[in-house]
Image 1 (cartoon, rainbow, N blue to C red):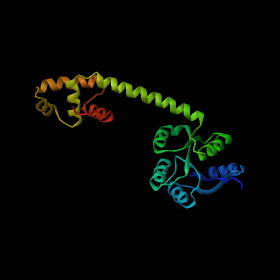
Image 2: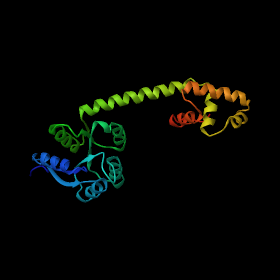
Image 3: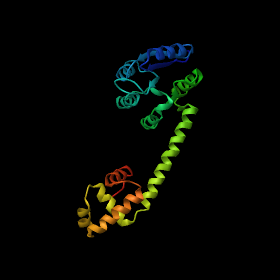
Length: 220
């Protein structure tokens, strides 16, 4: 008995893109394009109806973008493997789709061999990231790691009292309220705030509060 072919659905809002991919994929004896979708809502409906093995999912689509479609797949328990079709400018979205659980990433301008390799790989349970995308992700991860390290160093540069003042700034307290809470003078609070702004390299209390929320500082 011959092995079952790979059932594929193409979700992309450009008709020419879908038709081109369909013709390309159906040259392969083990791949069948069983459904197409032109927007995010249709992608969810078609995936539920046809239960494809692999979905080629464009990140940028009307009604519901690829990220939201992927989330919806997970919410609905759709078991199809998902390969994100992306362009270089979509790199900021890739980390989000990685967290949600996409199985592969292929650039739209990649060669046919890369796409076919990705489809066969993810269908077997593998994760496929096109090498050129992998290098982009590594660059972004390095930048994120560097930014996190810089933020940590800034927090560590605060004294214990400055850290306490920062947590109260994040709560929305003014200098007088902070002084009353910590049993120190308002002038001392003002000095601490000036030092905090300088160490965190921010311009005002609002930016300091945002920094506190972003780095998820804890109350002491």
